[in-house]
Amino acid sequence: MQHRMGLGELLDTDGALVERGWATQEVRRYSRSVLKSPDPRIKEWDYYCVLTDEFGIALTVADNGHMGFLGVSWMDFRARSFVNGGVGTPAPNGAMDLPSSADHGDIVQVHPKMQIAFRHEPGGRRLTIDAPGFDKGRGISGELWLAQPPMDRMVIATPFPEVPEAFYYNQKINCLQASGHIDYAGERYDFAPEQAFGVLDWGRGVWTFDNTWYWGSASGLVDGKPFGFNIGYGFGDTSAASENILFFDGKAHKLTELTFHLPQGAHDSAPWRFTSSDGRFEMTFEPIVDRAASFAMGEISSAQHQVFGRFSGQVVLDDGVRLQIRDLIGFAEEVHNRW
Image 1: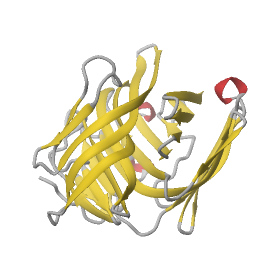
Image 2: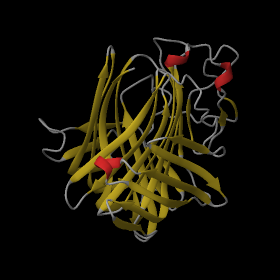
Image 3: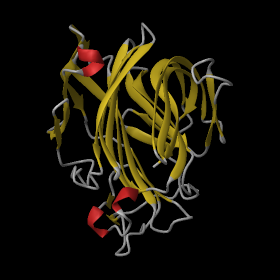
Image 4: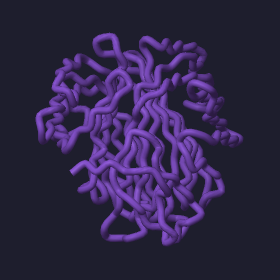
């Protein structure tokens, strides 16, 4: 079943989902003020990942209740390397004031060690980063413009059946053509829109404590047109809709169920495979580097394996057209959170 949501409020007066399902635009309005759950259970974040064939950057602003986080990661695919950097703040519990919509509301976070801003402007989004202490003082800074013409996205509202007030409202916006530059360790890296594409992961919800998720994403050009996909599963009740979807030339093509086949051993030790229940997404994934990160603080912990690499295979659009995918840069991840 793939139930498509209608317009309206996301939550009722008790803080529970009005409707579960998927959409291609922000059809449901999120409001933190109606939530009944304790602040530490409320998780809100904006995550951008912008990739080229040779390098990429990821930027995070998250208010996870018990901890706030500003993060930047730099990936060098030629060297098969990465650097993570970030700063945490204790128990913001909503004080970071993240927007209630993915379509309006700027984020400007200033910390003595890092400044991150995500701003809306006509026709797109502007990302800025300044972290002089990143990578032991090598520093990273710059500005990227993500063009966003009218196009479909992945929107999903997922409940957690074991906790009635728990839910996840998620938007993934693929195929954001990027331009600009990032200065890292004294070298300038240019992002050109024909070669650089970004994705936004916008999440708001009330989470249960122990969760594992699987997520994959890629964007680029196929047959000269913007193409991307979002795939994933692992938490909540997805009987109303999956988050699996293709994007081609601005239009969404909904998929049903997918399975991630991870390699034995290390996450980047061998190719991954992806299979679908209806044969519309059959892909292999050649790892380049595992951007691993973990932390533990008492009963709170996170183990993250975001593997960057190249996807190759075949997808089928809603009208039956088959697209051949060859060496499309993207990522696939396994994340276990106790939060």
